[in-house]
Image (cartoon, rainbow, N blue to C red; front, top):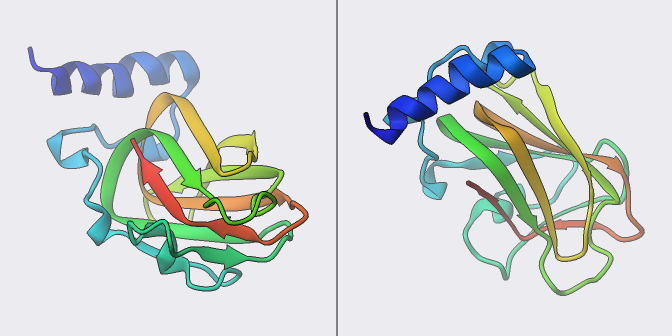
Length: 159
């Protein structure tokens, strides 16, 4: 049996039975649920300047937001994707350009979001590692506790 078959069993049957299952896990992963190419991603934000810079594939550009709770960045992946790791690269220009606490939220429809994990922010790069692979079309990053400088997102990657 191929690895996608086992991935589907693990993601949709075994793990949800052990850990609970949210509505956005109801769609079974398939080859079509692999992470979409970054050129299909769209980033938006009402609190950050130049949100598209967070997904443009260039470390020299960045979305920059206020050092305030509730600042957020929303990424539309273009289609439902399965992932279990999200990395936010803050760039290297400013040692204080990261929030002290950050939440990862996911959604299939862009309206109902589930908080997957809240982590402490770190200099240069903040990582979210999820035990259970998640199927979602939308990824929202929300500041829970602000840092001392502006929030800088040079690049977001999913695995």
